[in-house]
Amino acid sequence: MQRVHNFSAGPAALPESVLQDAQAELLDYRGCGMSILEMSHRSHAFSEVIQDAENTLRRLVGIPSNYHVLFLQGGATLQFAGVPMNLMRTGRAGYIVSGNFARLAWQEARKYGEAEALSSSEETGFDRIPDLAPAAERAAAGDLDYVYICQNNTIFGTMFSTLPDCGATPLVADVSSCFLSMPLDVERYGLIYAGAQKNAGPAGVTVVIVRDDLLGEGPALACCPSYMSYRTQADKDSMMNTPNTFGIYLCGKVFRWVENEGGLAAMEKRNRQKAKTLYDLLDRSEIFVPTAQPESRSISNVTFRCATPELDEAFISGARERGIEGIKGHRLVGGMRASIYNAVSQASVDALAAYMQEFEESRRS
Ligand code: PLP
Image (tube, rainbow, N blue to C red; front, side, top):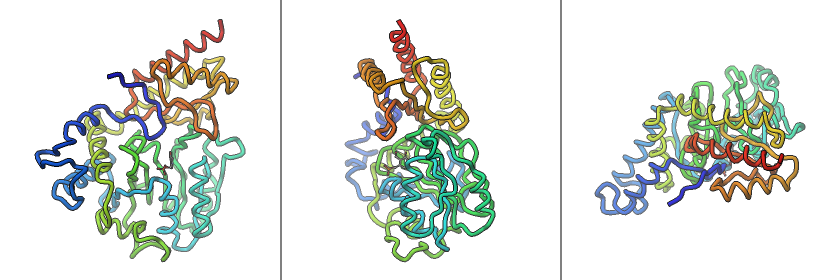
């Protein structure tokens, strides 16, 4: 069996040991005589699985007891609506528009209330994190239900290196592509959510971490579907209906893997080293151009391009011949993107870096 170097943006590489473990248990989950895929979500065995996943995540991230952990479905995209429906109590929120997913979340929120764009980097092609000062100023005025950010911009390869100072205004963050990539100070946020399919597990699970006082008696808007009520989901332990049992099971295994590998500080160290390998090479290159401004660079998604789309194509097809997959940039921006999530090893990054050097030399000679 030959596994490729997988740089996909999500669904993305999972730790091999997690997949092997799941495979070993697939037909007979711990002597139950059936697969975890085949058993009731109300069974004792599955109750243990979801409880263990939550407990491990709480330990790993350091989630305080006044925050709920929810395992929901509908992707990160459903949270674009879930956040305003639950939290827009006075009908006004502020959005920092730092990329495509932040813009989509902002547009979705405008269906439910007054969603202000506090700052945006659209004018410069989302190559940087926008100015945070307007968010701090607006938050200080005290009339926003929340300030919203997308902490790592998967498509444009940028991430927030500092958070906006929101004072008492709750900060809401889509952390889909940086969740578990580094330590997270949960108390800085009112709500955090992440689609699992990058660092936390398979597609089909969205982790929501939300502070209890924001839930009130229920959602801000009466039109909120019961499924999307954070209050209901918290009261029902994410099981008001059938959850993604297999997905949650795999997430639990990934959380344990991260913990056994040394936790979030260890992940950050590795991810920074992997990112450095690529950015150092890009900064020296005469053929590749990094697309994110240095002060805004992501340690999860490294974006770059060549001088022409034809060269990009040649690079991507050569990569495939060398067992390097998932390197094509998002269709909105073209070029290349190396997603270097937790399960992508330094050895895979070194293989990509070696190919980049080889490609550059071949074009020079
Ligand atoms: N937010 C971010 C930061 C993402 O990277 C993505 C998908 O890649 C989404 C939201 C949308 O996620 P989903 O496809 O799970 O709805």
